[in-house]
Image (cartoon, rainbow, N blue to C red; front, side, top):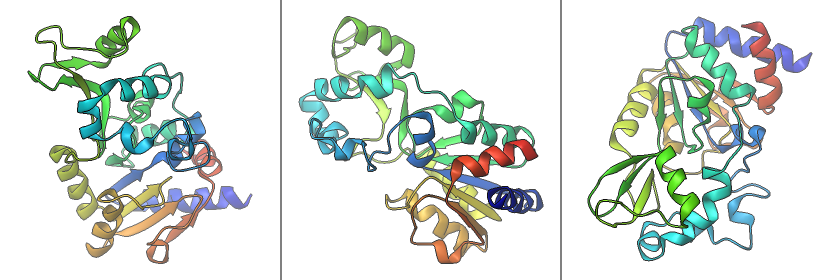
Length: 248
């Protein structure tokens, strides 16, 4: 009953707001079976993988096989499906309740759930490109390539193919970052879901909304630096969104 009351409270805030944006992190995808990178069982806790090498552009140029070998099971051959949070957000967008989703995630689950206006701050593997000639390849093409050999190479020039994921040492995609900042500035309510707000510049998004006079809501298992400024706070993403889905 308590979580149902919280769900109703959150839905009331959203329905009364004119411009709602949503910022999502890895915490929403754990409900789909994808480990949080920094959580228990996540990449940073594993002994068999050096997560700092995995998404480092300099190391990738030196040995791209390290990336492709160690991301195959959670990016390329993944069976994860959108969960109640992704599905409910897509339904809310369809009903005109939210304007945009800003995500730190690279798992494409928002799009798979049907969300249309998604800005990916850290890129995604939906597109790949050749580091030598710049030719682009879609996800399905690269997936077929890595079934045949460990590291895909450009059929035109033989160069290394890299996903459009933002690696350490690379800049964030300007288009997505600009749009994220636009929605953060114009939002009268920003809902933060499944992120502890420790990775910048994504972590600065709530500050932009707060400074611009917008209100904040946070649903996350652990505390964040900006909790004290939030008008809504809850811990259990799954329960909150199961109840919101019923209420919609």
